[in-house]
Length: 380
Image 1 (cartoon, helix red, strand yellow):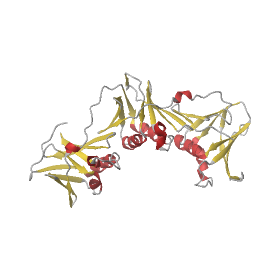
Image 2 (cartoon, one colour; image 1 turned 60 degrees about the vertical axis):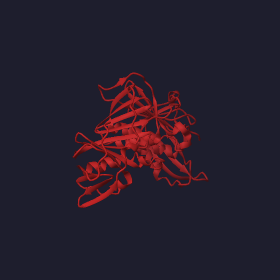
Image 3 (cartoon, rainbow, N blue to C red; image 1 turned 135 degrees about the horizontal axis):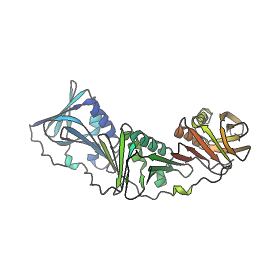
Image 4 (cartoon, rainbow, N blue to C red; image 1 turned 180 degrees about the horizontal axis):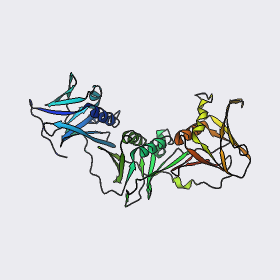
């Protein structure tokens, strides 16, 4: 990146940008500002003007966010401003920056605010990435949805290490996005766009919880996202935005060991029907609420029951199922209400295929040939 001369006192450089574009860019940049850091520069946003663009950069060292918006500028310049100061401003259709010395006047409508400028040399420099070992192009919303759903199945406690994060594994058709907390396992295949894909090494990576959450929010508005991996960094490009993130150490459990064995019953249902458990009178303080599930194969029904502490039925609901195959007539098992809720959220209104063996084996739910979830081990 070019080095820009320090402004002389009394010299004014003007930069004019669209307020709506600036507001959106700063909103996304704010997701990469750390809550706590010993480095004051990390609380700032770096601005650089070049070739009719205003480049906006934010980082917490692990993740770098870079985006560009159209700008009219007197000269090429680079400077940093506190994100909290920028966030407090109201942005109109046009925003004018007047840079003079170590101060900047920001004019929004009839209001002009003067802020301090920080030396851009204090801002961390993004290291050069090495050769890309794999690269794909995806629909941005599909990839963002996969990351969002994956976060629902990670371990909630940060002390669980790698289980608090997400595994991303390349394959011929795209990327497997995997998450687990040891009780539930979610595997999604995000398919690459036709005609795209470049693989030298099928090396998997682990995205931190924080990184995955940021990426899902920022790339969702893009049209396509190009994903590349090199030197333990994952790079995503969508529209005028670029994100480079340092990945975690890949010591993720081998998810391929969890396989579906013989199924006593195979049936289909609308996943959204399972959201009925949200209406059950389950006390908030109950950490592991158990829902008893009874399969009525002949009646093509699945009964859901929540029982109180004295084992009395407190609430009951019936869900229609369509039996594909069955070696039994009836069976009962128990399941954590959280996992039933997760199934409804993960699959939405999709019709899913459920594979059931017995009441002490995992339940496999499959849909769209894109992802598989193992909610829990069941126990009556």
